[in-house]
Amino acid sequence: MAIKSKKQYRRFRIKHRIRKIVSGTPERPRLTVFRSNKEIYAQIIDDLGGKTLIAASSKSADFSKEKITKIDQAKQVGKVIAQKAKDAGIEAVVFDRNGYLYHGRVKSLAESARKEGLKF
Image (cartoon, rainbow, N blue to C red; front, side, top):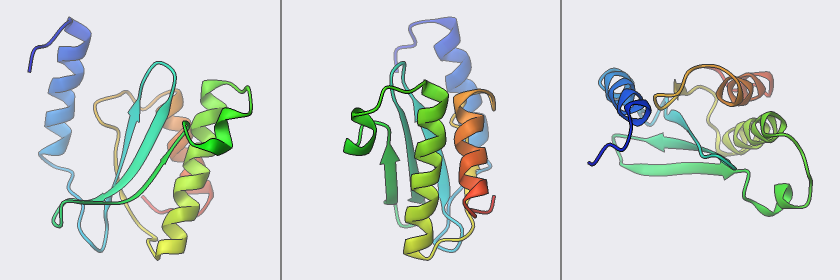
């Protein structure tokens, strides 16, 4: 993988350090977050089966109509992923911040998912 900047390299190192420890199982899958400059994505993954169980993003049709801040987008994605997880019978997950600092959009997504009843 070609690393373009120090910032990307730092995130890459942190991400791999976290992933050595954090792994999703069928009983307690992994909730991972990816944020781009415009959007935010969340997935619930079973690492043993190698499958994405549930996914939600700010690119879905629900979000495109509204003009809201990125933090509010992250809160809505957190609510959606938690509701989908409840519907699928998933109550507890392992949170993977994917090398990002637990701050801002990542934090608001996590807190929103917790508020909706997802345990991690």
